Image (cartoon, rainbow, N blue to C red; front, side, top):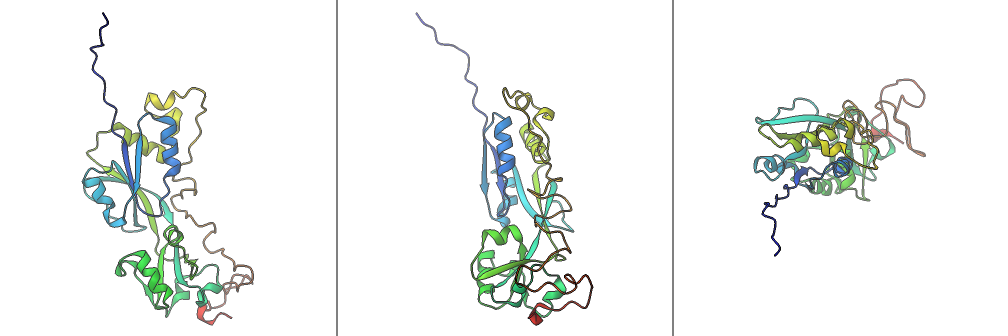
Length: 260
């Protein structure tokens, strides 16, 4: 006579839940998590206005959110770590004078109707207004790429107020995997993981993770996701260089509207 085991079956741990705003690409961190951990992970994109509610309602264990570059007030009851700066760009109709430049300063936009995305309901609606020629829009480069359109161009604005991407989680969280995921985001390697499951990887060599504060693939603190360095932009081939750049001198900056 066979006897079934009387040992209780241990239920599988619920997935670690991560929410992120548009423009964030958490794939690198998720891949590293899957390489090192046995617990599954679920990630979903949510609207910026709803991201903190994901934490409050328990629908997410961690969130990636967009915060102002300066003056951010951490919400009560949350931990938050700024990760990298996003490059601001100006969106304009493709036939607008700013299209002649590869990068601009805020002074180059003097006299233009620069609209606030918050007043336009959504980025998509804001870009519809831009395409109609009513005004310009300043927004993060990563968001502009998501909403790329043939009738709109985007140019970096090097001295515009920027935004940062931060990772946040509840202060009362007692889940050790939350801390483990934060470690991955911050560049902790498998060998330095605090959990044995991350260190026991037969046949795999732990790959040194690039810190979110060190590499600009996901950006780095004090750096941007833009491929150019501030103040060193060049005019695109066949386009006019920003005054004072090509000749190595600094004459008064010409507004884009006067570019020929």
